[in-house]
Length: 116
Image (cartoon, one colour):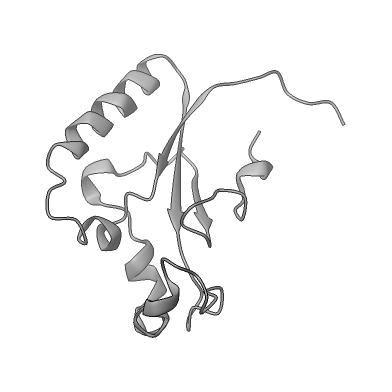
């Protein structure tokens, strides 16, 4: 299988309402990300949204995970669709892919390798 030529893309990662709500001040971040998205689109670069998500009951969370382990019960009780909802200010266009990963720190456990 031939590989496609190298292409650049902007990855917009973890900008979910549930995640952003954990931080007291995000008002300065959103405008900067919007500018980056606008610039990428103007340059005809791909904009790819990556969000973290778990299945119902959060079976992906290892209790030893430093970030999520202590809160596994909380994540297990949250509706996965609510948790994965991207913040409305940064909504993707219909043609832009949204990929779900099941690890916060990495996109290695996601569908990014399937994009061409």
